[in-house]
Length: 107
Image 1 (tube, rainbow, N blue to C red):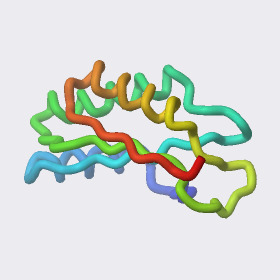
Image 2 (image 1 turned 90 degrees about the vertical axis):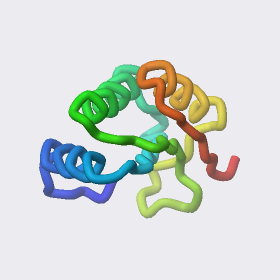
Image 3 (image 1 turned 90 degrees about the horizontal axis):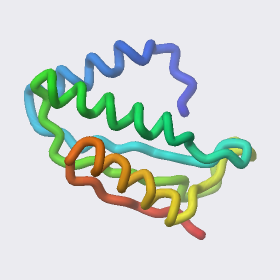
C-alpha cells in the first residue's frame, strides 16, 4: 500500500514482538485493485498470519477490517462493497476465533 521496501517478514516479526508485550488491535485495509477484490487465498493467508501470532504468544485484542474511505492517490484503487468487507470479516472470525469488526467506505 505504501510501497515500502521493508520486507514483510520483518514487519510480521515486529508485530509479533509488540503483541507479546501488550494486546494490540490489528487493522487491515482491504481494497479493490484494478477491479479485483482480494482473493480468498489472500484472506485465508491473513487469517493464518494472525493465528501464527497467537501461537507464538502474541495477544490480539481485536481485528478491524476496513476499506477505502476517500479518493485514493491511484485511480485503479477503490473500495470494496459492504458485502465484500463482511465476507472478509466472517473468514477472519471463522479462521482465527478473534473478535473482528468491519468498517465501510462510501458506497
